Length: 249
Length: 314
Image (tube, rainbow over all chains, first blue to last red; front, side, top):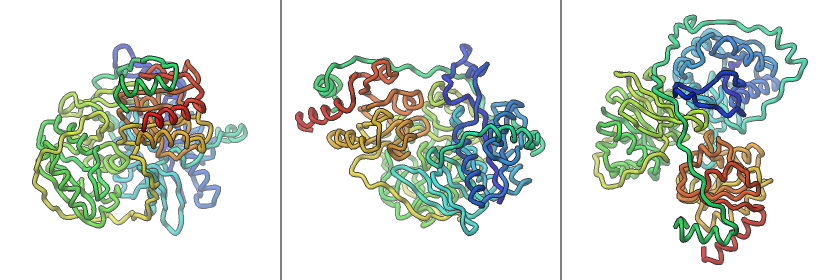
């Protein structure tokens, strides 16, 4: 079975971002970029399925600028077999990314597509579900466990107050949540090997998709700051203040 | 602008998030119809009909909606959407699951996690875990598909009396089936709607130590939450997580224990009315947002808090 793992190049998880003074966006100059953490979990899950003998080939796919090559190389170093890079601006919206991925899915015919549940830059949480709709497939979002058996995917999902398990006909879409697995680090020999793995370059037009944004971003601003309050010295003082000053207990 | 709002419920009760989302829908400036899709959910439809500002409730009562799977929900909503200018749902686990399918089915971009309706076509939403706010405009003539962060809106009152119209089910795509729910049984309120939340972070050191928080939580009838660090460390399940990638809460009182205050956590709780921080590191960023800070070892302070509350009759 072939698996597609779409990945996104985003500002590294540990970077404290800065809003540009002219409010046109977030300053990305000289900022460390990495693979979206939820997508790393997706790559790891695909590799584990391959190690179990369920999966035969893993294709890492990304939509983004030329530098996104590096992100795909990371996936290849972790254990993906080959890559596809669709060269496009960095701000392609989820609906357009989903359309490009749908085009790739039609060409590659995977049985499973594993995506991160959301990207930590735009926080949209849309692409996987949109892709599922475009392909007419079932989806198991926010997955904490995936079992492939008898032509079906049994996906355990993180929902309010606990877990929900659904059974999906294959091919299907899975989006990852934090507890699905802990991604591995690529070893040095595997990083060297990844340099020889192939990455195909494509354009959105190859899949008949216009990547121009539909939403107009009017401005990007700093969030309202919350002011700190007072320090209390003892637990007694805290309880007294919560009861009599704040009136919340 | 006619708005279709998707109710959040569990077939028995209508979630408060629906009443809050109605407030956002009204700001779009048109009649608001509420869709209740479920099984044996007539009571939910009746509750939705009482929400002020609702014109009509559509009730789709069918076995295929019992668990509100994304595949069947989106098929129904897409079929209904033709008559509406906007489709709106709370940005709950359920809404996040089916709404992007609706947007893709209608071939439009979705605006996720709206925290303010600035104009009927202009919305503000957090990006980068709440480190920046993005204001976007939906192009003229395009249907709007929005998920709304309920904690950012004030619930409408239950003073209305809209008509309830029963509608048929859409064709079930038949690609998915429900297997089971494993919902932790708890006497405590749900995290998302609790009046008081007590959360623990990496400073708790282990999952077992969360019982210290549970004792305090039970005295205050509070929900128990956690930071992502505590979830990552395996102390508690993921559904405890408060933060940009977990749950967003805005209780009357939020007590953060052993939580340093990573941006991603602050994004999930900074709209709380009163924030208390208990941390032994006085430089912890959590103190910058806390109304009341106590610099102390939590293993000493939390049992003391429990005792003090007990003394005061909680």
